[in-house]
Image (cartoon, rainbow, N blue to C red):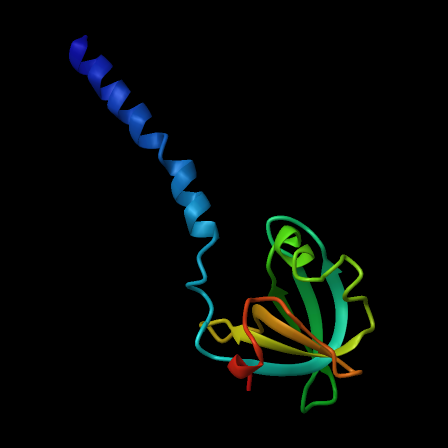
Length: 134
């Protein structure tokens, strides 16, 4: 009986660490080439102002005359508000230039570094400055 109780206690203790591990993994940037900046020019399709991270759906013209759709992760709304962003910073139809850290697996996506608007204004998504961009 004591062995069974001890095994159950150890099992419960071990599983109590699972949520913490997944929470830490969520904030990993391991999937992105954080040392690479890629510039994309295209059109905002959607800007999701949500926790834990914002999300941009972005259409980039391709050589076939169509569009490639990218999924771009961003910082949290809380972080972005402190750096001048609002839920209206990006709107569907906006033609912008995104600088991203691309996905390591080569798929069409990445992590937003900055947005450059047609008037030349740049909004930074990460604490990078102009010296860090191509």
